[in-house]
Each structure stands twice: as structure tokens, then as C-alpha cells.
Amino acid sequence: MVRQRRKSEKEEEKREQEDGSEQEDQKVKPMPRTVSRRNMQSLVIGLVGGALTLGAYSQTYVSPGTSIGAGLFVLFFGLLVSEGFISL
Image (cartoon, rainbow, N blue to C red):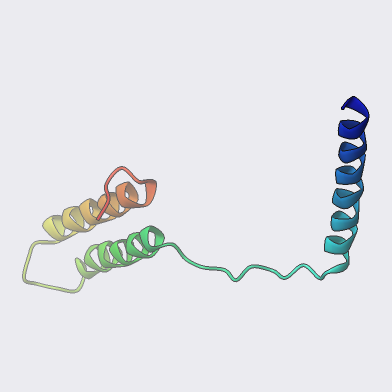
């Protein structure tokens, strides 16, 4: 029983070594880069916040201080989404 078990273990080790050498021969394909949904949402929120903040200097509908405050709030919201504290 023990001899048979040792023999089967040796056979398994040989198979693993053979499989390992076959895998090394194959070319390693780089994985395509993908952007996660959370990162894309954070980017869009950040762009909106930046546009609100920069728009404070050229618009006359709202006071510049209010527009800058709203832009910074949106940027902070985007940061919370990107860090995972808030999910959309």
C-alpha cells in the first residue's frame, strides 16, 4: 500500500514537471487593459466637478464662490466614489 502510494506520488510529480515545461513553451499573452466601471464613474464625476469649478470664472448665473463650492463638492464626491466609500 505504501509503495503504491509513493509510486503514484512520483508519477504525479513527473506529470506536474512535464506540464510546467509545456506551459513555459507557450507564449505569454498580455492581458488587455480594462477600466473598471467605478474608475470610469469617478473620472466623469471629476471632470464635471472640474468644469463647475473652472466655469465659476466665466459664468454670471451664480456667484463665483457658490460655483467654486459646488465644483469642490462634486470633486470630493468623485473622490469618495473612487475610493469605494460610496457606490453608484
